[in-house]
Structure formats: structure tokens, C-alpha cells
Image 1 (cartoon, helix red, strand yellow):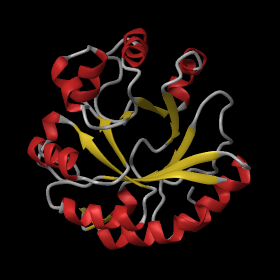
Image 2: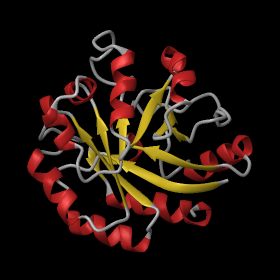
Image 3: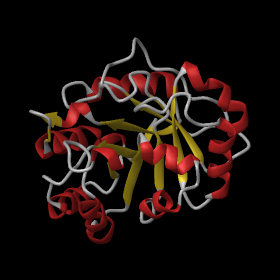
Length: 228
């Protein structure tokens, strides 16, 4: 098993972009992901529009991602130009179907239509049993990936990791932190074999609800032997 990315989610206005650049220079497989949720801008974990704009312009690492939450997710499904503008400068876009007050507020056909209409992005679908009926339709769309995250961003470890799904690029999240990242990588490798994948974490990188760069560095140092 090889890690294409180690995705590190939740940097906000309290984080210096220059520090992220230093980390990415040392660990080029690092992917910093930011939460886009207009109704929560400026709160912990959710950067302001100005910080995001600076990040897109100044971050020099190879990999950066955005997670669309709440109104940003619904706006994407509706094709709102303002949300599509927010996505510019990112290559991977995680669609948080299982986080925020979005359940029952969108049509899955419209979601699939918008994914197809934006082939320049890789869309990461936050996967759970509730939306597994999307899988057959997603196989027809090359620019998608599946993230196993049964805790829906709450940082809760699963009972066990599932094997990758045939026909989908799959990644893993849920309860991963510096203290258990090696164990989790080994467990994922057990079910994934030679598969190329990624891991994602958010809550496990925080100390007193701040994005902790020391924890980020520990995770990347431990993950480095498994990275592409």
C-alpha cells in the first residue's frame, strides 16, 4: 500500500501560510485541505475568504484541497457561480454529504450532474451506508474518489477499515492522529494490499481546537515511508 496524499484538514486564519510552505517543501506528499463554509467563516477551522484567497495564491505545495460544507455544498449542487469561483485554485474538492445541515436539501441527480460538468476537479465523496446507492452512478464518472469516513468528520475511529471498492479511488479518514497513524496505516495496508490510497485527518491535528503544526509534522514524519 502506498499513500498518494496525506491530507491535513482544518487550517484557518491562525495558521501562517509560510509555515505550510515549509512543511510541504519537506514533505511533498502533504495535502493541506481547507473547509469552505460561508456561514461559518472566521470561526475555528473555517478560514475567512481573504485567508483562502491568500492560500490559493501563496501556497507552493503540490497538493491542496477544499471541503465544501453546508451552504457551500448546496451551492455547488445548485451550480451557484459564487461557489464555483470559491473552488478555483484547488484540484481536489471534497463534497461533505455527511456533515452540516444538507440532508434532504438537494437532489442526487443534480449532484452527479455538477460533478460531470466540472471535469477539471477530482471530487471526493464523503461515503457512508446512507449514500452507497451513488456508487453505481459514480463508476461512470472518472473525476471522483470515495472517502471512507463513517464518523462524518467527528474524528471517531471505525471498528475496522473496509477494503477499497472496485472502480473507485478510495481514501480513509476517522480518528487518525499522531499517536495512532502508524497503526492505522498498517491496518489499511492489510485490507488494501498494493492499492494506492490516501488518509485524511482533521480533529486529530488539533490542540485546544487550534491547528497544531507539531502534530502535523509528526503525522507526516511517520507517514513518509509509505508515501509515493
